[in-house]
Amino acid sequence: MKLFLDSANVDQIREVWELGILDGVTTNPTLVAQQGRAFLDVLKEILDIVDGPVNAEVVATEAEAMVEEGERLAELSKNVVVKIPMTKDGIKAVSLLSKRKIHTNVTLCFSAAQALLAGLAGATYVSPFMGRVDDIDWDGVELVADIAEVYHKQGIETQILAASCRHPLHVTQAAAAGADVVTMPYEVFEKLFHHPLTDIGLKRFLDDWEKAKAVLGGIQ
Ligand code: G3P
Image (cartoon, rainbow, N blue to C red; front, side, top):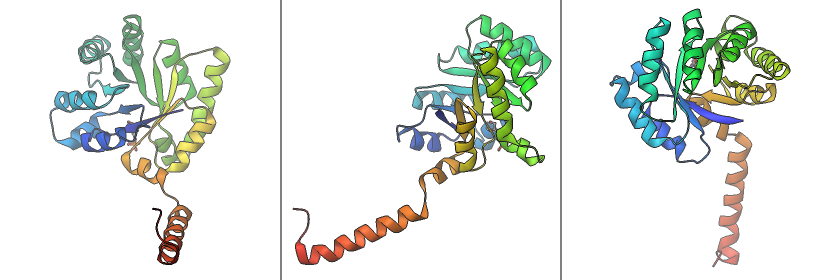
């Protein structure tokens, strides 16, 4: 399973990219608006950092305008994935863009039926929003598992990009449920590294080494 960062913050993206374990980035209009900078400037900077899929969302709502916007975004780099909302116009736009070999991600997916439509339209990715499903007291991870089952049985190649990830458990549960990608905010990514027993264990190793060093000498 691949890890994407759900962020439009170039400092965060650069830091995580340098770890060597990041595969791509997802943005959305909310995340870009939070940066208070021109969309295309932010997007170009992300594309300069990340050598992998970079998702940029259209803001048009009619199919023809979505396609136009998507084509303009795709011209920036082969790594651009055009994110399109799960509407009737969105599905039409995805069908047209995928025929033109432009990578797409159907976003705001909340049911296996919607994911089926995205798959039939030839989307590269579909984004079930786990956290927002949990927010209404349904099960976001179960949604990922349902989509994985439908795609597997129907031979649909669209990749499941589990989004709206709120905590580390979402990451591992989505992986077990069959997600191809999980995208997560910087804060969740950061949490994946930490475990109190790692901190306690490392402190103990270093304390023991300090004590022994006084008697036995250092490494050299
Ligand atoms: O990019 C879509 C997404 O991951 C949204 O997450 O936390 O706003 O539901 P959230």
